[in-house]
Each structure stands twice: as C-alpha cells, then as structure tokens.
Amino acid sequence: MTETTRTSRRHFLKGGLIAGGAMAAGPVLASGDPAILEVQPWANQLGEGVDARPYGVPSPFENHVRRRNVEWLTADPVSSVNFTPLHELDGVITPNGLCFERHHGGIAEVDPAKYRLMINGLVDRELVFTLDDLKRFPRVNRAYFLECAANSGMEWRGAQLNGCQFTHGMIHNVLYTGVPLRTILAEAGVKTNGKWILPEGADAAAMTRSIPIEKALDDCLVAFAMNGEALRPEQGYPVRLVVPGWEGNMWIKWLRRIEVGDMPWHHREETSKYTDLFADGKARRFTWEMDAKSVITNPSPQAPILHGKGPTVLTGVAWSGRGTIKEVHVTLDGGRNWHQARIDGPSWDKSIHRFYFDFEWDGRPLLLQSRAVDSTGYVQPTKNELRAVRGENSIYHNNGIQTWHVRANGEAENVEIS
Ligand SMILES: Nc1nc2c(c(=O)[nH]1)N[C@H]1C(S)=C(S)[C@@H](COP(=O)(O)O)O[C@H]1N2
Ligand SMILES: [Mo]
Image (cartoon, rainbow, N blue to C red; front, side, top):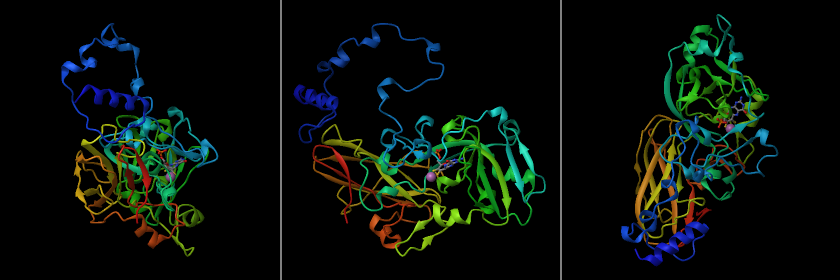
C-alpha cells in the first residue's frame, strides 16, 4: 500500500468519518511504518507494577465500550434497561461488566451475610438457606443466554434504532456456576400437587413470576457465580435464578423466596404484561421459550467498515431457546444469494453461537442479513412473516431477520426491505 492511502486511512479512523469511497487497505512494508520503526512512549519508561491494579479494568483505549441506554425509552433509570455493546464483543461470552441490565426497582445491594433463600408452600419442609448452605450442594457450570422478551421490541413497526446494541442488546451470555433448582426443591420435598413455582426477588420491586414445575425440575439453576466470579450486583448478587432458553423476566435476581403452588399466581400478569398482543386484540399467553434469532454485529451502524474494500470479516451471534444453532446463513445482497456462515467456538445448548463470513468486499453497497436455523429445524423468519402472524401491535418476541445497509463508504444503517 502506498504512503498516501495509509495516511488518508489513518485520517478517517481518527475523525471517525469516512471521506472517500471504498479503498483497499492492508499490511504495509515494514520500512514505511513509523509505528513500528520509532520507539513508542510505553517503551521509554517502566510501567506500573503488579499491585497497581488489584482488580483489573479494561485499557483506557477501550473507554467507548460501554453499556448504553436509550433515554427516551423509559422515564426513570431505576426502572429501565441498558444494552450490551454486541458490536464490540467477540467469541460467545459476555464480559460481566457489559451484561445489559434490566431493573424494575433499581439494583439491590444485598449483604451476603444476611442473604436468605426461603422455600415454602406445597413442600414437606419449609426451609431457609444461607448462601453458605447453598454452596454446600453439588454444583454445575453451564453457559446460557438471557434475552429480555422486549429485545428488538422497538423494531416491530419498522427500522428504528441505529445499532445492534440498541436493536438486539437486551441479551447476554454467561457461564453460570450454581446448584440445580431440583436439588434444592428435593431438599424441601415438593408435594404431589405442587405444579408451579413462584420465585420472588429481594429488590424493591419484589419481582415475581410463575414457572411450571416441569421447567423448575428440568434445567433451572440457583446461580451464585458468573464467568468465574461472584454475580455482579446488577445481575442479582448474591443469587439469581437461571431459566435456560426462557424469557429474561423469569430469571429472578436477588432471589429470596420460592413458593411452590398448584396453579400460576398473577394471572393478571400472565395475561397482560408479558403477553404478545395480536392485531385482533387477542393475546398469546405463556410465550416463554425464546425463538431462534441472529444478528450481524459487524459491520453494523456502530461498526462501519473502515478499511475499505478487500478482505472483510463479517461476524454475528445466533441463539435459540430450544437448543443449539445448526446453521447460520448470511446474504450480502438483501436475500438474492445466501451463503453458509462459519460457526466457530462452542456450540452449547441455549447459549450464544458465534458466526463468521469472511469475504472480499468489492466496495459496492451491501444489504446484510443473517438467518439462524436451530437444532429443531426452525428457521428464523423475516419481520414481515412475523407481522403477518402477530400483527404490528406486538412488543415482545421479535425474532425477525435484521437488515443493515452498508454504503460504498462503509457506513451502515438500520433498514427494512420487503
Ligand atoms: N428481582 C428482579 N429480577 C429480575 C428483574 C427485576 O427487575 N427484579 N428484571 C427481570 C427482567 S425483565 C430481565 S430481562 C432480566 C434482566 O437480567 P439482567 O439485568 O441480568 O440483564 O432480569 C429479570 N429479573
Ligand atoms: Mo425483561
């Protein structure tokens, strides 16, 4: 590459704006690059010693990597949501500090010494566990995604928010350590008429949800660690419920009580709040499982193509509440031609999968889409296919195919094509 193209590339990287059309970029001859030829400031003096950072944080150069909210979405940050910066991540695990937060009554700062979990209702013995009690049961490690039912909810009526952080960022994927809920329920002894559990949070919102006993005894976890360390306060420290593959509102944080009952509580809640409204006013109830979904995270509106034409890494994430992801297809031309993406990294049940499509960009505008196929054979639908079934009044469970329009200058925007 010539000196002129390299300089202009550096110029638009710095300004964040892309001046001209697509230009090729790539490695330069070593003799022409001062960044490798000259001694840099970090090599001129000794750095900080090992004790300077007893709990490490990311490089200051990564300061832009942040959870962000959309201020007009909710009136008050105490009952609000922020979004995972999906376009800044790779692999399959969401770093703890970047997991999106959804609170109804703010973050509860629970003292672990005073933490208690009560099991009551239709059980042989009503029990109260301390955190240490919970940590004496055999534990397991499992990675699962948590997706809020309202993820992509703003996109039902058309392309809205400019970035996958905002359109798809109400999801995180974490390796949990915890005790299977069935172990704890067995300790209390569920009576034969115990058909539902009602988990309750210790936060000011005292969030409660009803979960059928079959799910509770299947794969739910009472988790106390995420990605190897204690849960973060934002994610329910010291203990949260993990409800694999099911919508986020069931994953009660700061878990303080589980009542066992013979019917769901909060019929009102089940039929109004977390229900999908159809065009005819009828509602879809008990839509707990999250359908297969995917999104291209790079390129995307917050992550334009800065390097010009030539070798380009397209990447994204896919997940299903019903199992693993078998295939991801991507198109560069709005669905005329579909290509098989490369899934790389672990393929765990109900966990985020990472896909890549490595291609030579010719500098022409692109219409990018990804389409996930899960282990049940279910194929991610288009937004219009979803609207035909559910109408446009919906808020929850939008798993439609996302389109990004990439211009010749590499910038991308959220669009819809029919
Ligand atoms: N106690 C309690 N649990 C809760 C909530 C809450 O407000 N209080 N919000 C729920 C909702 S709607 C979602 S989507 C997830 C969000 O989990 P996160 O904050 O770890 O992303 O937690 C769920 N569990
Ligand atoms: Mo949620």
